[in-house]
Length: 426
Image (cartoon, rainbow, N blue to C red; front, side, top):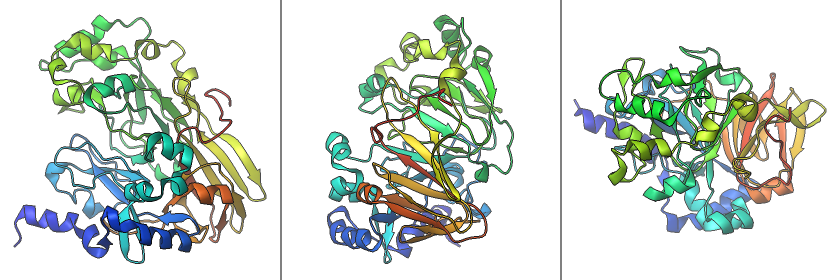
């Protein structure tokens, strides 16, 4: 019998052995052929990410035998990342954890390397010139219960440890929420009138008992087919709906809750993205919160998202599901396209996007697409693509060839649209 470590190594390398993986300096020629054959659209393979401190919700179509494919010591797989060039900040991570792979003719290469090779074509000269990378990503975030009340640092605070800040947004796709799991509510922000001293006392009690930080917050019932926009520095404890999350390309966070469903959260997850010298400085830690936005008495009005129709035609409709600005900046957005059986439309977006099919079957440009029912770890699928800047501007025809609606989510990077709805426009 194989030793346990060796057995897990064999499982985690399944993706690597089934296709040859190209090094960064060998990507160019294969990338050119892949873009030509795919009409400017790249096929991607599933990217799975575990979290050691969470309990998988088991709705992201991963096979039941594979939720602990990376080993129980790594935790269960509760996330699938889409069109990602961002590494997951996990201890004991695989070298490619969080990074998306492109697949063409049995060869695979990192989307990150493809962007480095042909950034002007893939994400547009403006975005590539400013960021030198695809600066956003999205994921499915799927847990059985709630996660700790936490925040993501601002750019200013993340820069103290050489990182970038992370605003994010939520959308709850009905197709991946056949059940609510244990707690379909999310605590967000802090009750108006809460003081920094109140939060500081919660941190002082970290190793004594439940620090009771949720008593300072308010929970909102989550509604399928809607979403939220969460700026950096805002506390939130996501509930148990499977969540589609467009966000900035960073994995910084700070956990402010010490016990969740009986599980203890170590202090290290509170301070992991703070300077070492500040790890016991409670005033510094609390000072990273965006206080005005946390205690906003109109929090829902300023952060809640309902779908807004962007365009429609015979048998199809395209809706904004993530929109609005963060501190006045257009950082990311997302749309949901729905086509009835037999319908077809041509999308002409002003910029690149990461596409995921969440229901039905059809064609996305030259690529066949099919929503998977069950995915083995390391298996390829036909549901995920990266639509290049060049292809998006030329137009991508999407056709429903199935007997049920074809539904696809696609998310975009910063400053793609000349006009974007604001939170509350609906």
